[in-house]
Image 1 (cartoon, rainbow, N blue to C red):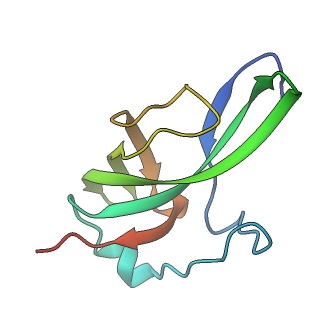
Image 2 (cartoon, rainbow, N blue to C red; image 1 turned 45 degrees about the vertical axis):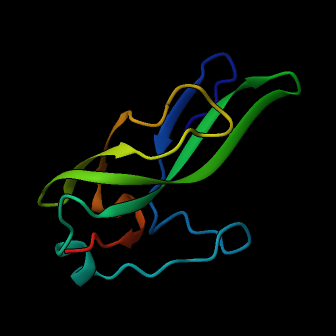
Length: 111
Protein backbone atom coordinates (compact mmCIF):
# COMPACT_ATOMS: atom_id res chain seq x y z
CA UNK A 1 0.00 0.00 0.00
CA UNK A 2 1.38 3.40 -0.92
CA UNK A 3 1.05 5.73 2.04
CA UNK A 4 -0.89 8.92 1.41
CA UNK A 5 -2.06 10.52 4.66
CA UNK A 6 -4.64 12.67 2.88
CA UNK A 7 -6.72 9.70 1.74
CA UNK A 8 -8.32 7.10 3.97
CA UNK A 9 -8.16 3.65 2.40
CA UNK A 10 -8.06 -0.08 3.10
CA UNK A 11 -6.78 -3.16 1.30
CA UNK A 12 -6.24 -6.85 1.93
CA UNK A 13 -2.74 -8.03 2.81
CA UNK A 14 -1.26 -11.09 1.16
CA UNK A 15 -1.30 -13.51 4.11
CA UNK A 16 1.53 -15.59 2.66
CA UNK A 17 3.93 -12.72 1.97
CA UNK A 18 3.20 -10.34 4.83
CA UNK A 19 3.44 -12.60 7.88
CA UNK A 20 5.21 -10.83 10.69
CA UNK A 21 5.54 -13.24 13.65
CA UNK A 22 6.42 -10.31 15.89
CA UNK A 23 2.88 -8.97 15.48
CA UNK A 24 0.80 -12.01 14.55
CA UNK A 25 1.60 -15.67 15.03
CA UNK A 26 1.84 -17.26 11.56
CA UNK A 27 -1.01 -19.53 10.59
CA UNK A 28 -0.46 -22.39 8.20
CA UNK A 29 -3.25 -22.68 5.67
CA UNK A 30 -2.25 -25.35 3.20
CA UNK A 31 -3.38 -25.74 -0.38
CA UNK A 32 -5.66 -28.69 0.42
CA UNK A 33 -7.59 -26.58 2.96
CA UNK A 34 -7.93 -23.71 0.51
CA UNK A 35 -9.26 -25.98 -2.24
CA UNK A 36 -12.01 -27.25 0.11
CA UNK A 37 -13.27 -23.75 0.98
CA UNK A 38 -17.08 -23.52 0.76
CA UNK A 39 -19.87 -21.06 1.39
CA UNK A 40 -20.62 -21.01 5.13
CA UNK A 41 -16.97 -21.31 6.19
CA UNK A 42 -15.27 -18.37 7.86
CA UNK A 43 -11.90 -17.01 6.75
CA UNK A 44 -9.60 -14.69 8.62
CA UNK A 45 -8.22 -11.86 6.50
CA UNK A 46 -5.58 -9.21 7.28
CA UNK A 47 -6.96 -5.75 6.57
CA UNK A 48 -4.55 -2.80 6.21
CA UNK A 49 -6.00 0.64 6.92
CA UNK A 50 -4.34 3.98 6.37
CA UNK A 51 -5.59 7.36 7.41
CA UNK A 52 -5.14 10.38 9.56
CA UNK A 53 -6.21 10.74 13.20
CA UNK A 54 -5.51 13.28 15.97
CA UNK A 55 -1.96 11.92 16.29
CA UNK A 56 -1.20 12.18 12.58
CA UNK A 57 -0.95 9.64 9.74
CA UNK A 58 -1.39 5.96 10.60
CA UNK A 59 -1.10 2.54 9.03
CA UNK A 60 -2.98 -0.11 11.02
CA UNK A 61 -3.30 -3.83 10.32
CA UNK A 62 -6.17 -5.82 11.81
CA UNK A 63 -7.34 -9.41 11.39
CA UNK A 64 -11.06 -9.96 10.88
CA UNK A 65 -13.30 -12.96 10.21
CA UNK A 66 -15.38 -13.00 7.04
CA UNK A 67 -18.32 -15.35 6.41
CA UNK A 68 -17.77 -16.92 2.98
CA UNK A 69 -20.78 -16.51 0.67
CA UNK A 70 -19.33 -17.65 -2.64
CA UNK A 71 -16.17 -19.35 -3.91
CA UNK A 72 -15.05 -19.66 -7.53
CA UNK A 73 -11.56 -21.07 -7.97
CA UNK A 74 -9.13 -18.78 -6.13
CA UNK A 75 -11.71 -15.97 -5.77
CA UNK A 76 -14.18 -15.55 -2.94
CA UNK A 77 -16.81 -13.18 -1.62
CA UNK A 78 -17.88 -12.85 1.97
CA UNK A 79 -19.47 -10.69 4.65
CA UNK A 80 -17.36 -8.98 7.32
CA UNK A 81 -18.26 -10.26 10.82
CA UNK A 82 -17.04 -7.33 12.96
CA UNK A 83 -16.34 -3.61 12.79
CA UNK A 84 -12.68 -2.65 12.37
CA UNK A 85 -11.35 -0.72 15.36
CA UNK A 86 -9.38 1.95 13.52
CA UNK A 87 -11.55 2.89 10.55
CA UNK A 88 -15.14 3.45 9.53
CA UNK A 89 -14.48 2.59 5.90
CA UNK A 90 -15.72 -0.97 6.52
CA UNK A 91 -18.48 -2.15 8.83
CA UNK A 92 -19.80 -5.52 9.93
CA UNK A 93 -22.07 -6.77 7.15
CA UNK A 94 -20.04 -5.20 4.33
CA UNK A 95 -19.13 -7.35 1.32
CA UNK A 96 -15.45 -8.24 0.97
CA UNK A 97 -13.97 -9.79 -2.19
CA UNK A 98 -10.80 -11.82 -1.57
CA UNK A 99 -8.41 -14.31 -3.09
CA UNK A 100 -7.07 -17.46 -1.47
CA UNK A 101 -3.69 -15.72 -0.98
CA UNK A 102 -5.39 -13.31 1.44
CA UNK A 103 -6.56 -16.06 3.84
CA UNK A 104 -4.67 -16.28 7.14
CA UNK A 105 -6.93 -18.91 8.79
CA UNK A 106 -10.08 -20.96 8.13
CA UNK A 107 -12.93 -22.01 10.42
CA UNK A 108 -15.06 -24.71 8.84
CA UNK A 109 -18.83 -24.51 9.03
CA UNK A 110 -20.53 -27.34 10.88
CA UNK A 111 -21.99 -29.57 8.18
